[in-house]
Length: 555
Image (cartoon, rainbow, N blue to C red):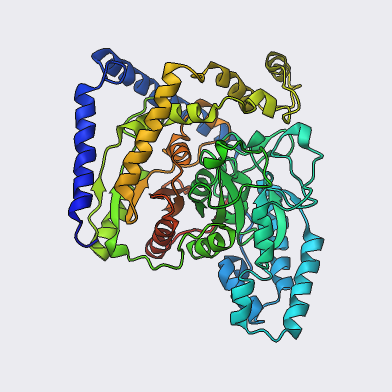
């Protein structure tokens, strides 16, 4: 990476010193006394035992049920990046109509198996594609001029069922919203349209977009294209699924606790959660409060890293200096292989750790970089910090959100109805509402302490990363679990969630398949407004490790 400046070395040394000092001199509530250490070890043992037993149970269950074969990809057009397709359309090597038809055919092949698409506008999209072709047949503009004005002219895209597209499903997986249609385009959708792209399909989410498996009482459950007995993640799970299965060339997701990055990880594609406040969240549901707006990030999801930066250019309303060249050899690389040992979170899978080491070795050999392993103890409190930061006075609680913010559900009654199969809500949604009431509450010393801890962690990481640092961190501790298994691993989303409340940009990068044929990868985090660094790293690692691997399930 070149020589590290004395200033940066001093920052790293200071962080290490403060970590050591905090461990030795912190007050009793922050110091790990012997009994707290014993309790943590016992909880960690229980966590591992539950993971082991649940893995055996679910594996046996789905061995009996079996998997469904995936239709193979026959049309090579489906294997091209969105930017490549756009270039061929504007140079008239392809028509937009044949592109849209190819992806419609693919959706019709995969959706009976995967259930990723919940609504579509095939006829409207075809008519818009024909209009693009008629314009190109008569225009006097050069391909270069078209690229500058409409970089995605004629290219279809999809978006999750929580980002509004005029006239299309807009339920966010909530039963009482099943008849609601979009009244207008969300700002991100409008920006893609202005760039020439064509909305094609709406994809499945978790209920109210607040769980990491895409399953709800409106549209059902979405299956992983690499193993249909596994989850796709959430809440942008349907979107990651359609991308991985080559159903559309690019799409939109939103992320308040990992809802872009976890699905991308489980489905082996690329995704980007931008720096807070750089891409609009207008036109989405649930509607984020002013505070939650700083945690929520809407961003691109796609099979190819080369499509990320052009999409962010279109979507961002703030100048992120994305055209500024990134010199990889000048970057400072920091990493952690796990969160330091939260006993409520599953241990990081050995193959995920191994893939990170391969990346670090590659960067050292190919670019002369010297990755630095760091320890950020506050990351162990990621779940508690995120839950506290989400619990804001004056915002609708989860019971109100389950009623579409038109009153509130009767939680006890809904739980009783669920036991006899009569509730319109999923079990995990009801459990989320129940545990919300049990968590740390605003105005208490513990709540204030968690807020302070979050700010301290933010300041620590921002000082470390600056304008030339990136942080490699697991996206999730395990490859895609079986359907329903997340109920027994509820806090495993912590690796992504903490980055939301810190506001940093983060890019999910696939690194091939595990020994079980499931996608694995990592996330790269940058300092505020340094999205270009994490996007550049995605392109580099795609070249080195191959990126997206087309799914192939044989039964």
